[in-house]
Amino acid sequence: MSDHMSEHGPEHGSDHRPEHGSDKAAPRAGTSPRDGAPRSRASLGKVSATPAAMKLLDEIIADHGPVLFHQSGGCCDGSSPMCYPRGDFIVGDRDVLLGTIGDTPVYIGESQYEAWKHTDLTIDVVAGRGGMFSLDNGREKRFLTRSSVCAVAADP
Image (cartoon, rainbow, N blue to C red; front, side, top):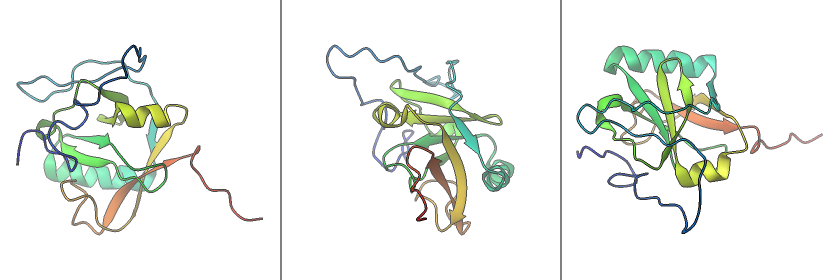
């Protein structure tokens, strides 16, 4: 597998460029090309996790060491953040650091951030299989991103 592991192809996130003349204010993230460690960037503090997500995350970290989340594609509820070993995923210059869950950074592709910038995201867990390369795969439960902006109102 390449150093740019992503279900969406090589260097997903780094090939997203703002429209000509666009001035994006979102803090961007990146990693050191040598060790994969996240560069210091301002966190937006726009992500949290449920207790079930924290438990699964702790299990994955115990098995694999430090990880990161990368959210790309999908729309609102039903989107699955991908969970990777920190050294195996190169965060692109156009990826945005949403925040951290404990010590785990959560990044989002710039174009996806533009769609979700007016909401806070919650990482949760549901039954099912994770993404092909995501570390939650094979555990019969997977991470899921929820958002209050995209929540569907219950019928009265």
